[in-house]
Length: 393
Image (cartoon, rainbow, N blue to C red):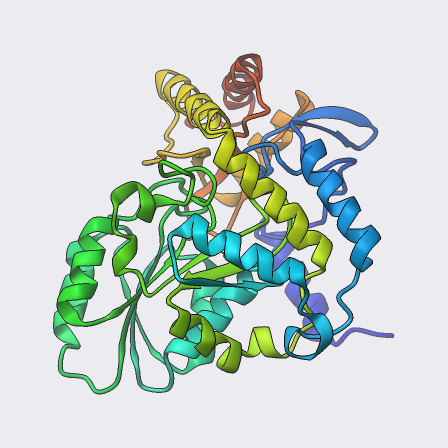
């Protein structure tokens, strides 16, 4: 097989601008210490915030489910892929989120596609934070809705947009991440909830990086702020703090019924394996009964943010286990990441198009399995890397 000429030219252009990406195979992607290139390195790249991906109880739940149901689901949910495990997980998720119902999808990405394309269509007005996850923007484009972006985490700018399009025909929808995946900062959720109510907009939240970490029970930022009742649909993931794979939407029974009937990423794909559902149920139980895990990861993240600020690093407005170290240009970020790897720390560089040009960064992701010594080792390595590769950082 041969590639068209534009493929080669595109790859050469990416390489020339420091934007070319390669897959990096690690021996174990979950824990704080992984095998990489034949040696053990300290990892700050995983979203396994609570350390549940390798928890024996979660693994045992998956094994028992494989013994009962096998591995693959074999069909879509509306054919033969729906099992007691799916129904039980959805009941658990609904209770966890304080919602009437929940619906599980194979991935969080597919959940966002399914939710937004079911709620809005051609000509409807969608207001979205500029730094929302890419899956939300892809979903809006697929829906045919009219996309209007407001300044990042700026409720006033969102209100101005809402007023500007108050007379436009069609439905209204306001959508935001609650924890932003590349900055670790929080959306102004209380103000946005008030705006959605005031202008009669549906309100959709992507709680992927908040699920399991924020809120009194770990249900997310909406729970923490007491605004869950005003949410049309809350999207979460099973693949970050819950340590598995899959996504879900929680909301009213009617909204979930609409998704079953209209969400193409739900209708036309093979169901999540029952074993993944049972593993997620075990993880949810740990989240419910072991709140010390989220206290631990939040404390460690606060320690890292404080130490980095003390050393003069720019970490933006992070308030979560996602801690960015802002560098600027892609090439400089790659050099810092390479210097860290040379010191035995895996903390990859994030470059355009994931972040805007000129804002390339390292994205340190803290988990409950890290130690205080791990935090200090990362800070010391960053100080050394800055001196060696990027003194102005």
